[in-house]
Each structure stands twice: as structure tokens, then as C-alpha cells.
Length: 184
Image (cartoon, rainbow, N blue to C red; front, side):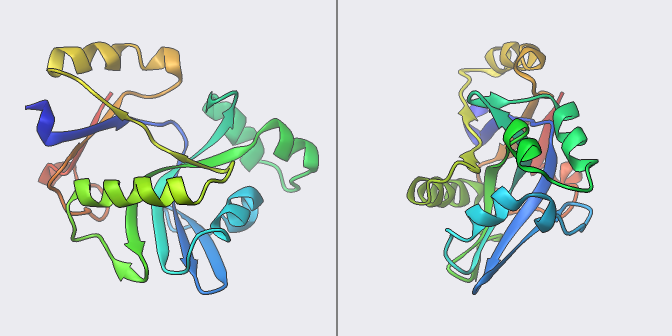
């Protein structure tokens, strides 16, 4: 049943993990590339989080309350110098969709539903323009979710992400073990 799954949009951005330790923060891509200097607004946001916090999410350009085309993010990534104009014209946010560490404790073995509940509290308590919570979608059945997926391109997203509510965090690509599924 759909109630076994947490459903979110499949964002078209750069998957990243934001790591906050003591007085420092780093932003890493899924390919283990350090991105901290490329996104100063995310570094500033990270400084507002408590030490011992690790968020998993998607870096996107966010304007007018919605994700902008990936091409705008690519243009920003391709620049060697981030001017005030570039930062203004292509503001980045982290759309947080998972909590991997909280209070210095590893949360990856906890169920998805528990990690999500704590993530919602973290985002609510640390309001910042460069941090958004990836919204959850509701569907009374799979047909209803299929209709939402069909409308995804109009919203600038790639489809849906299905995450088992009872699943631990999977490292790497987790499709083989049924933890997260991309439904494009």
C-alpha cells in the first residue's frame, strides 16, 4: 500500500550532504566532490545549524518559491567567480530530504519515518532562506500517485522518489534492496 512509502518529488539538481562539525561546515556532492566554496549561501546556512548535524538533500536554484531549471544551476557551477549578481540571479537552496546525523549521533540506522520527523523539526527550528524541506506528497492509491508523476515535468521535477517508511538509510544506490525507488 502507498501508506508504506514516503513519497517526494525527484528533484533535478545536485545531490549533496551538508556536514556541520564544531565551528566548520562542508558541502559534499554524491561523487565526493567538495562544493562548499561554490555555494556560500549554503555555507552561511550551515553555520546556523547545531554541530553534529548532517543533512542529505538536493542543491537547486530556487526562485519565486519553486525550483528553477537545472540549466540555471549548471551556468552557476560553470563560473570560476561567483559575483553578487550570479548569487542574486541564481540563488541556491538545499532541499533537505533526509537527516543522517543529529546531535553528533548517527541516525542512519533509524527508520525513514523517524529521520523525517526529526528533519522536519530541524528545518522548522533553523529557518534560513537557503534551506527548504522537500515536501511530501500524498496519494490514496498508486493511480493517484501516477497522475502526480505525469505532471512532474510541468513542475520542473524528474518524477517521484518512493522511500519505505521503515527503511534504514541506504548507502549508495539502494534500488536493489528496495529502500528508495526513482519513479520517472
